[in-house]
Length: 107
Image 1 (cartoon, rainbow, N blue to C red):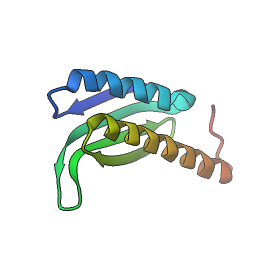
Image 2: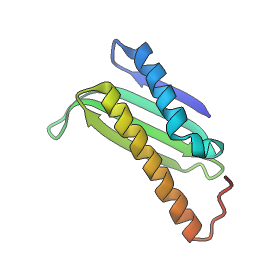
Image 3: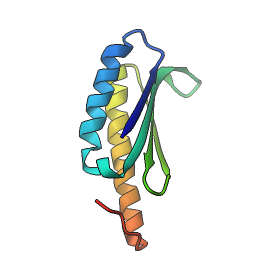
């Protein structure tokens, strides 16, 4: 699994280690199907959201499909936690849809 983490925060080294640990535990069941993961943690100041945005993109092999999940929170670690939980749930939904269509997904 290739991992790319970008952050606009000054505490990015600690945050990067946290992101990596959370992703490895959160996606452990799917590690063979994960080609790459891109994580971005940055400030957001849109009308709808304030605080920090965590965006996680997971590329699934061999299909090349991208699963994407975004969360916002004032705390970067909470944003990462919610993001990892969300991308894990997205992966589970994708697996369920794939198996219901008769698509074989190697575990």
